[in-house]
Image (cartoon, rainbow, N blue to C red; front, side, top):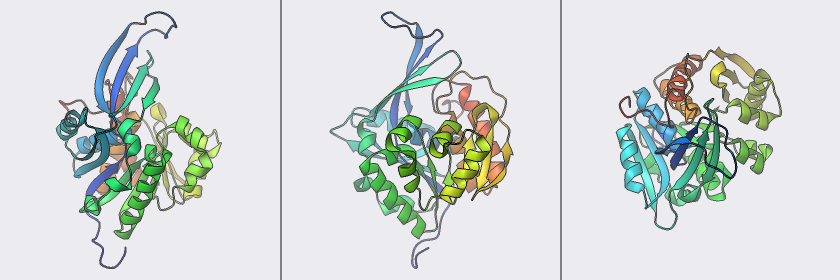
Length: 307
């Protein structure tokens, strides 16, 4: 921590994407040139925003979100975040619409995404203010930030400013498709100064080339010199730190309806527990319980009645 910098607080700051989700649950495979019956809903989403909402739902820490949103739906998104207990710092874009993701969810709860990054893709250093870090004890970055030049510049600046205050930093890699397009090695090179990485198994395999979860977790934690919490869905979670396995945590029982936001729910609860003083394995157990809750409902945020 640099001389004269404030000491870390207890709040969580999440930085990244805010999205309007169009979720379509279809019981039968999609067929070209005809209709497929589905249950369709429009919901607030985005990996960063979902993570913040689940962290707030876990209770304890104050949770803040820095994101960019189109003027077309800024008020709706702000109110939705506030209802979950998140303190939003939204930068309203007058030129770009809010990001939109169409999420096609099959009968097994598995998802296919079609994405328009919109205003979220323009989140950058100009949107930052050091006041965002007041009383913050942890900074969490959505991996989507790292797939665009503006977002990478913002992430690099935020990590430096957090490090100066002794604030821990985590990253969720966010997207297998974007990781492949950007390049795993290039992505890993961006993670200097990161204390915690929260990939799912597909992301970890892309980043390491290892199929085995233990090998992937150990390899990533050695490469990034940090704690890696590998999200394994129905198989729970696996933790490794600086190349050594810490242990595994079983999944909580769940009936999968929609896996949208399950990884974000895990991350949010994990970070909230970590800020409350839990050890990594204990925090991972909280993450698994939150992930199980997420897959039993439609959409990526906590249900309003439970938030």
